[in-house]
Length: 178
Image (cartoon, rainbow, N blue to C red; front, top):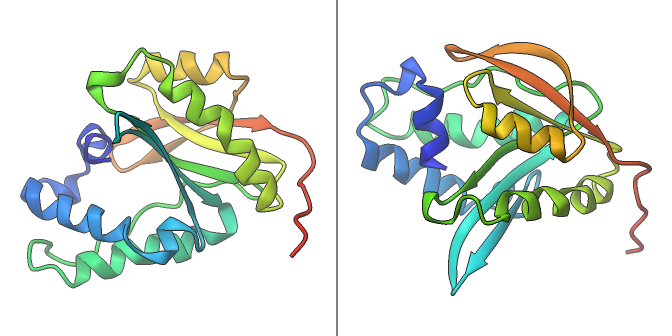
């Protein structure tokens, strides 16, 4: 996940030492909100090690999810103040916030496998569309998403980068009996 923050080149993070950012990211992924509360974290493992991760949530949960990072950065002396993210979701979608594969495991189909798993979680959360943003400067990811059926629905500025907003129609939400 640290790779994603590096690629985004957020000016708010320029002066934050890498280990401090990693502490905040790690703490966020240990919260109930990130693991199975308002959001869902899906991991891919190889030989007992996490080699890929997909993180997403219903768009209406964006503020709840972002509040975790805002609070953790407010509590950290390494940050000048709380980090407040730009809105990234479109109405009525399950939002894939992050997809990352370890550099040593890229090109092995792990990203595809994670993407194939997401409709289950989106439908469980009563969503029929998955949305994501992909950096204009990441044509490899763009090709992957297009191969998986995602279509560009617009563009958006996040931080200092332009992104394509893409969506995939996945069908009707599923009902889960309690």
